[in-house]
Length: 226
Image (cartoon, rainbow, N blue to C red; front, side):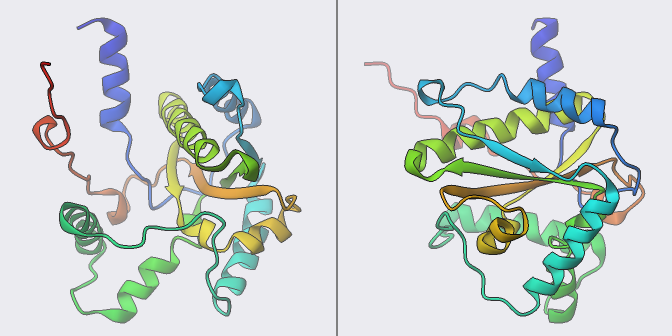
């Protein structure tokens, strides 16, 4: 394997969804380095449909976090992009495996509804991250705009990892898209795809002590010899 392959493999192997952050801010130059790298993401017809709102400092993030929690406590979820209709078969199994590992790590026992709710709300506390980015796409570009934003999201995560910045990609925030649109003054034609909470990981926190598995190639690849 080449050195470049090994470097990319290391970034992918080491990256995980951070669910507990330190309060330390990431400096503006580092954030811009991540964004410049992510900007190299390929897109359908080079449309580059992604746009982001980034909270630059922890104080701005804290104001947003407080407003978001207040909204979530009394609002009905509403997303711009439809969420999965169901998780069946192996997709249900993988989802349960991930959730179960997280709950075990943070000491939430099976059947503990209050504990599960507390952990769920951590999404809307941004896991105490000092920054969050709201990722949007152009509505007229439809599913391909959203797919391109997914590619951008991966570039952002790997760019952050390369600079020692931890990330948590979050679809949860997109379930309150109208609130995000109003809070950040987003135009109606911008659809919320996801959020990315980011900062420096609290490596001692139990929520950061587990890792998810990946399926073997035999489960996802069908070779066709013609």
